[in-house]
Length: 618
Image (tube, rainbow, N blue to C red; front, side, top):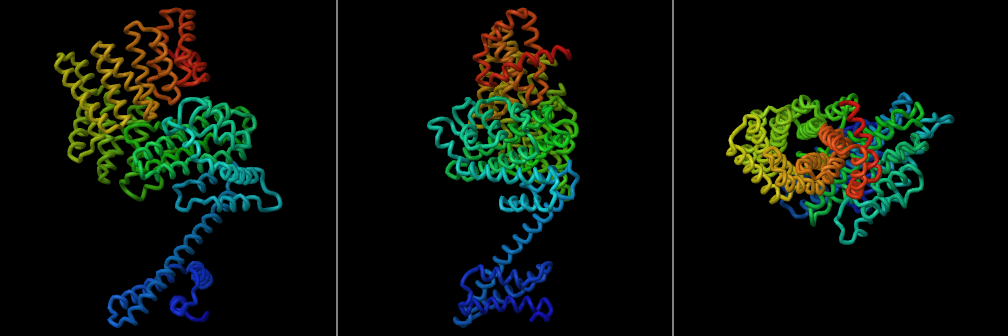
């Protein structure tokens, strides 16, 4: 049989398995799998699949046409045997591809320049790759990187980090969601109250090595993560271990939350929170590693590794149906990091014109850039996302980008364009029944109309119509139970009443907007509301609350790189000048108990540094 042409050999192999099945000689699917592994030559899978397809068509036709019961029964049993062959062949092919992927990863890492090996390793860990490596394959990869008489130091550390990360994950796996059941009546999710709820303290107790333990302890106590990243003990091995741990935790949590079919809405919110929290963790780690003066020259690429993982997280996130098109994610990229992110996110999509994923990535980058004050770039991204979404028929994304364009044009004081885009968003959202887009469109239309009326010194009636739009949007957002849209509507109503010199009404809306943003986890909306609250309280000469709200807004906005931090800094600087340095510091000390529960002790201590930075660049 070995001398026969391959098509004849493969047809004979298929017939042999069918006959053995009919004779009762196939006891388990594993037998079929092993026969296929031994009988099909590497690199000839397509030929075998053609033979299998032909045989399936022939037997299926026999099943459909047979009139004799015995013949039909035999044909049916033969068809089942062929289906088993097909299943086991797919399994063999999948394992072949996985094996090839592992071999390719080993080759790519070992032949790369030492400074590029971490980048190549993270490409192998990317969940968006065609063949991401499983935990078992990571073990094999760790072993393979140790082969050879004199393994290079970087390869030794990568190998040790992979092994340590997998061992740590094994200890954590049983505690992945145990913390949820220990929260009693507390709200489910990642809590803000230090050391009381959430997973961090539970996970810290399972850790043995210093870096992951320090990280989880900092998170449990609501402390900046830069302390963990600036430890002298940080090296390539501990960084890789941490990367493995965090990636498996994040994927495990999202998988568990996504399966909460008894309450899909809660599951979606928790999955969103997981993506946001872990993206935030990596962002803070990147900043901390960048400031770590103890890193050896060969470890200076660790901050870039953090951003590489953020890129992977964001791309995975955009593929989820619940990806928040109106906020919640803040992607802070500058310089090379922005360019590299765009290249990474764009490269897999270049051959497919107009994909939902690409439009959503651009939407994310657009509203992140707007928050940073980079308005021309934000407009460019939203226009591109709008064109792709329209071409791909993604009406939700199309409406979202019309809304974002409106908001960005307001920031540029181009109110006619802001009104035009919000009107387009409102019309389209009502046409397709996209109620979330409608709520945002109403908020943006009212917001734009308020500033347009102020610019044109319009009569009070113009403001009444704008307020009406805003209240409609708020009512709809409340009906939908969408915290981010409620926060937007509340803040828009608050700002409108500040423009109308009605600070009492503005405060009521802005305080509600802050609460809604806290619930949804949107740091930008929290900081935005707090900055305007400070202005409203200041106009009423309530300096205590002006200072506490201003400091909170200042810190949150500065931490995410949002340009509005200067607004809060400017108000606090004026207040400091009015009160004098001694009275200002005394008042700041008095408000300490109001500030620390939100941003922690380190956040409170960082406020004077931000104010000094503002004064230096005034």
